[in-house]
Amino acid sequence: MDLIVNPALVIPSNELHWRFSRSSGSGGQNINKTDTRVNLSFNIEKSKALTSYQKHRITKQLSNQIVNTTITVITQENRTQYKNRKLALMRLGILLEKALEPPPKARKTTKPTKSSQRKRVNSKRKHGEKKQSRRVKTMIEEF
Image (tube, rainbow, N blue to C red; front, side):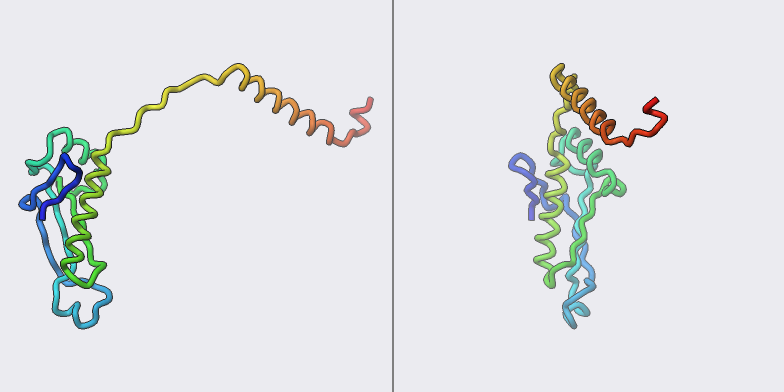
């Protein structure tokens, strides 16, 4: 099964490495005899489907999920190996798609307008006057 990340990027199945093992969790006696847990590994550096920019972008974005230039996705939610394989492919595709999204545009810093500055100062002055009017006048302040 090839992994279709987006219309421009398809990772061939020979670059994906599968491992299967016994799963934990629900399944009863089925767990004791079938290998339903799926480990899907993809080596970024050895991939021929990715450009050097894509490799750099993926390693930068997914640095906390990459071990020795390899991304590994583990699934064991379903009782069948086939469903877990589909789920692992989908999760890896989503990871790679998000990592390859272009970075957001940088925000241009702007100065506040004169009217907004004036409004802010006026509201602060009104707030201060309100607090001042609430103060209890003591004998010392009267003299």
